[in-house]
Length: 117
Image (cartoon, rainbow, N blue to C red; front, side, top):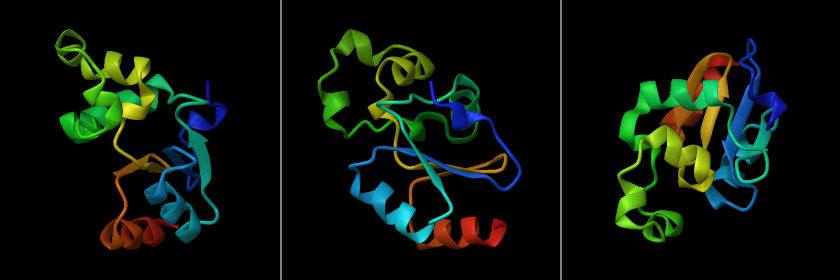
């Protein structure tokens, strides 16, 4: 499990995949961020729970190959259980700045993240 999952004041943690183009763009714009590869390290349950509370079903990437590979029975499982079992189902990147979470990456999110630093 990723040990960088504890929220810390102004610590920037990017949960994603090292080979995801969007995650690479975010890492390039946020050189102080630490990447936690969700396939290797997983996502701490406290972070997943907070993200699900904040973003709801938008946290699940239902357009991914992982999602398309799931059976109908698997797709109806609770989102938290799905994300624990298949961390690549999480929409990326999930960025934690202190205790503030951001989902996805675009110019608006980049400005909001940098405003907190």
